[in-house]
Image (cartoon, rainbow, N blue to C red; front, side):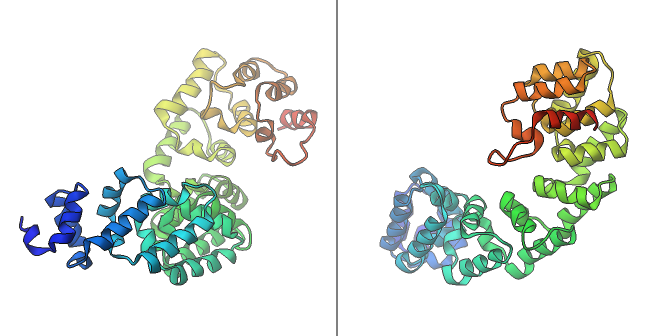
Amino acid sequence: METTNIHSSGIMWFFKEKGFNDKSIHVIFQKCKRLEGMQSENASENWDYLKSVGVKERKLPSLIRKCPKILTLGLHDKLIPMVQCLATLGSKPGDVASAITKFPHILSHSVEEKLCPLLAFFEALGVTDKQLGKMILQNPRILSYSIESKLSQIVDFLASLGLSKEVMIGKVLVKYPFIMGYNVENRLRPTSDFLMSLGLTELDLQRVVTNFPAILCRDANKTMKPNLSYLRTRGFELSQIAAMVTHYPPLLIKSIDHSLEPRIRFLVDVMGRGLDLRRLIGLMKFVPDFFCNLYSVFENSLFLYLTSDSLYDLTLLFFKYRSKRDQIIGRGSKKKVRDKEDVASDFVHY
């Protein structure tokens, strides 16, 4: 490989000093032609600056291999303004360094040309600057998405499900910003159609998407249909599966071998009660993560629930054995909590 004969010896020595081998250097120059003839001092300045903002030196070689263009960017007119802008959006000292490590291309974008239009776009959806900062630092690729051909399509799709652009769509995007990386026609719409085919109403689907937007990003054919087939073989009707999915959407993406089958086997074989579908659906309403955490702090109440006929008394036990009471009744900790006897009465009549 004649890399050393082709490129400037100065920048070559920079890469050699940083531990890059000839093969890596050749690939880097293929990705970024602007490195040819570049002074090593400029590359060193950018390297040192990235270390100064918290990027770990052991991760810098991988970062440069992903986006060698970073070494060619102007330090004062490009890197520093973007890092400073990202710092105003972050809530923790290491947020910016983490975002750069995940997606180094974030530094190649312009504050004026890319970040400002994004702020205006999400502001119209009710997303605050602080929330947008959290989204970008969690999923830095957002900065690379086109507003017209990508983000607007996601918003229009969510609006077609009945979610309001003024409030709900913004909340969905903030809750799971990775949804913006998926294609509407190839993934999001087919998955939503599959959920509707289970018998979910439009309001049910809105509730599912609002509470667990990641469900739309899963492949219905590869993940959800096998789970659906398994539940049908255990005696569940579509309407019953739809009811459980509405309260706990991950039911359709949980592992059959490691989650669904062990829990159902526990009910049937260990408890010896048979599969009481109506009672299980009632359990899913008040303890929606039953298929996620069987052996939890409220395990004793589950035993009693499955072996007793007094649903009223057993519901009260949930408040004794589960520390996060507001998760059961769907209320935030800062809001007024309903009287637990009222909740028990609701459970009895469910």
